[in-house]
Length: 453
Ligand SMILES: Cc1cc2nc3c(=O)[nH]c(=O)nc-3n(C[C@H](O)[C@H](O)[C@H](O)COP(=O)(O)OP(=O)(O)OC[C@H]3O[C@@H](n4cnc5c(N)ncnc54)[C@H](O)[C@@H]3O)c2cc1C
Image 1 (cartoon, rainbow, N blue to C red):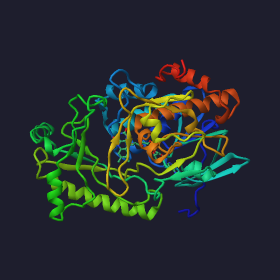
Image 2 (cartoon, helix red, strand yellow):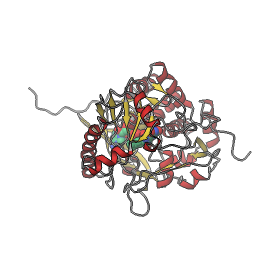
Image 3 (cartoon, rainbow, N blue to C red):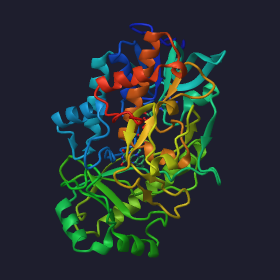
Image 4 (tube, protein in one colour):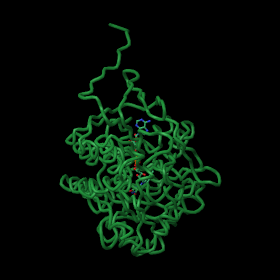
């Protein structure tokens, strides 16, 4: 038997023009958009499937992407929802993570995107403010990947950071980032009994005042946060970690199955491997404590654990500084921008890093805000775009635009912009934004009417 190390093989069908790192909501949509606009795209992902936090984090549903009057996020996001529906993987903004993996992969391959899975970005070589190549670690060894343009959709801004782009982490007062949460799926739930119990105990759950303006509010999807007295009792008896604030669960489009957004890990850094290790350990203990509490609650008597997410959910880490920094004021004042590439109305949603207070502050109806192209254009590096939860924003601004539909819209804009840059022989910083907006509208994006008309 040979003991010689095998050299990693290069099997690119065609040399890529755009390399995208991170196959989450922003990344796979960016790849589809760029490929549909004629670019040769290579999408690099550390896991064996697409979806990022939607699949490796079991995070859902799609948060607020519509007002009472109109659906704000459309384009590829809308097409994806329709295709998920066709395979029974979508109901009232809630989706089946396995169907998500399937449809995202189908859409990427149909668009002609080349996938490189199980590849982890480790190094970036920059010369004269341009990325020359990136290095990824694979089972077969290191691979260097070069292209004229790159997109960072790693969620953590790994590519931009390794390239030397400036960034910020956490809130200004102490640098702490939002709490982390390990999501888990529970089966054997009698959703009707759970709902009947909560409706007859209104003091036991949070009444979201704007339930009818979030896309899933008025439906048969079960989305509740509460069971306060059971949580308090279990904590007094020492059976439940005090960081857990309530039981928050959302039904999946699968019979008797809900996903829990309930574990709560405080004051640890998502950018430090030792902290992340502690976070996974703490959260996994909480999962089993919560399962123990659930057995005593109406509708959950037969509940069993189906799966925990492969990766703890990271709400916030690095925010790469771009040509504009999106703020909490932009959300609350419903600011409009001439370089709008998407629009949102999700509020400032900060899961307090110390667990002290967690509130959602929405822009007052009918306010909604524009997301400007400039937050996708990082400072210092000329052939790079950034999209998703690591886009240029403050702690407060990021807490609103980090939700999946908005990340997907940012991805569509970044992918389309990159492909346009190739066609027009220009850089992301110099791109003619009206041309980008025209293209996005043709693809079905709802950018509203121009702000200054
Ligand atoms: C607990 C929790 C609950 C949430 N609840 C909701 C909700 O209910 N609704 C909603 O809409 N949003 C919710 N969000 C927010 C939303 O899920 C994320 O902000 C969104 O998924 C971010 O998308 P992204 O593509 O920017 O990054 P991610 O989803 O983080 O995807 C990044 C991708 O990059 C890959 N990657 C990272 N680093 C590397 C590397 N070095 N090399 C190779 N690959 C790499 C990752 O594996 C991943 O696939 C929640 C988030 C969390 C954590």
